[in-house]
Image 1 (spheres, rainbow, N blue to C red):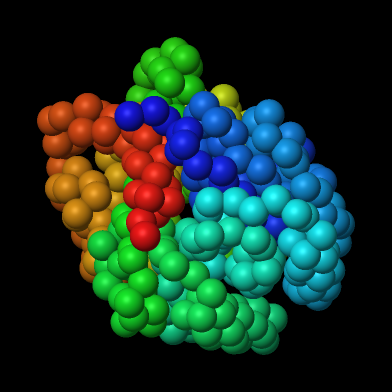
Image 2 (cartoon, one colour):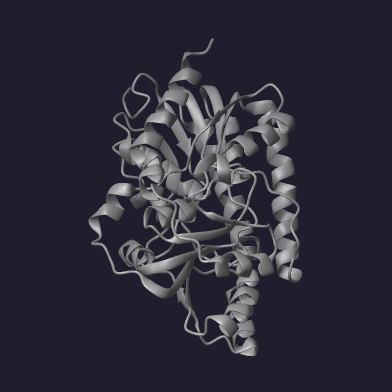
Length: 376
């Protein structure tokens, strides 16, 4: 099978992408950018001007408003503008596609697809937002808006879509309840193994751990304060490098100072090469995330042969087997206990994760889209 749906015409709505030069890229965006790159017959794409360089394609790029102010009010306004642009561009585009696919469950992607001319319509949904506990007023507002948006977009998808691409079996079961009667495919997020293979091996530092992800409470970053406070007493030489940024970064930094956690480094955004080098040097990967659509960062750390400690989410074992060290969800004390057990890597970790290499994932998505287009 080819790595693209070569017999169909495809429109992708990546209208919600916040990707831009010098910024990290969200997992949902990454999956579609990788698919576009590996496609032999490129899709047309609805995409913000600031993200167009990430879409390596000869297909048509239909551009919307670029990123500007990325504060919460700025994002809300930006997405409203893009929704209006997306609807107008959908109405004015005369081409009718075999398949139109929203790259996310967000309204900024879903609503334009609702208006697009296509025989079959769908959306990529890597996870359903669960109930969340806010740490401050701004986070509570952000969580409330996300829950409201999810309710609205699910109502739209029940009416407008024919199929869903889900990130894992747990999400598939949740969506089967929320969107009864819709055909649901499962697609791993994957990672670029060839890019990791280009970086030379590094000597593992037994006192180095790292975290990679957005600095938000649902990623468990505040739990790492408890973990490192406990480990400072038993492993005073252990260092934790945290890669990424987000709305909880300032609060995390102030708590670091209050707790005198001098062994934590906030690295912010770093290049892919620097990230891979860090993973290859790190003996440990700490990933206490409360919600993941799949777990790209975890797959990358496993491939780099880190000892990975993560909260056990319902879908992890079906994807990653027994290779990570699983910790009870939300239990920082258990995280410390599992770390102190000091178990060695499970043999075959790197070879196991290689199955999720990007070309394999692209072939799977191509097959799903071909099946959708062929259905009567």
